[in-house]
Length: 401
Image 1 (cartoon, rainbow, N blue to C red):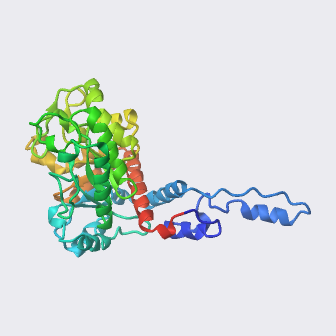
Image 2 (image 1 turned 90 degrees about the vertical axis):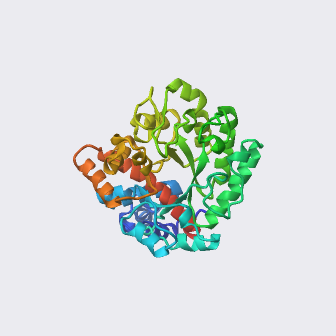
Image 3 (image 1 turned 90 degrees about the horizontal axis):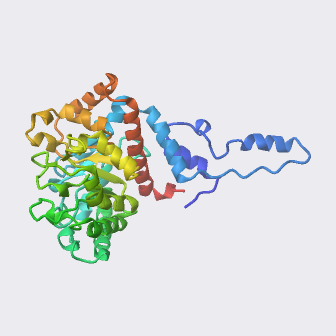
């Protein structure tokens, strides 16, 4: 709904809470007072051009810019972390977010109460620690083999891959309605990986065995979630090219960029084109492209941005999986966090948080020492804040315009 100019300044000030109306750049009455004074002092006033009402996107960009400028480096880095809180203790959930200013929570099986209503009450109690932004509440809700909510009876890829594309959209529409009603805002639930290999641990989770069958279903899943929860495509650049399980290893693939473009890219491209807001990076390496895991690879982040045209938020798979690989190169969680941020991830996901304060401090130190360009942090946090601002506006439709 578009508000009139008479009410817009109050709405802008309420949303910003960081600056005064008089200092807000490009305010809706910019130049109007001067024009009025000129008109009153002449006998034949010239007509004053109508001032264009700023769009929601323009106001969001202005809000985010002001918010970013007001944040310390430590606050910026902390906001890039998505972590897990224990059990179903609402006070612990609130403290986990507010004590460090993290970007949000990831919900796992032990975080899920018996009913959607109880979950909604828990999520509603989480504070972002600042007016005008909402914390992200994320979950892996694919359906089928990966189902966190016992009340999610909608189909998963294990059956959808053999059904018409419309069935995928219907399932993800129903699932996203359930998630939204429960207070979950981000679904790490759309598998864009492609494999026809039954030996792959992804086999029962893919929406198609090849690009031609997977891509339209991935797009349909995103379409089903649009406007209800933020959609996430995973596990970029594609776990289907390996049989190894990245929960306990860093799988390797000898597929080059050309092979990836033909077999794996189309499903991610379809989901991006359909409007997915997030892409999750997997802990696997396509060695001809980069010997590092994609989650730590600036090369793969460039491919996603430059080739696929993705402008949304990037998030790692659970960072604890790197340590669980048993490889000495990934044994240090602080170093892993630094490398993940330097590679271009906007959000770092921690199912088992570990020492979050130490990891935040390590990333801050890497920026201060020059190892990470401050612009990388600002770009990432800008995207994160835009997403959280959009969520806040959805949750406060009375202030939408």
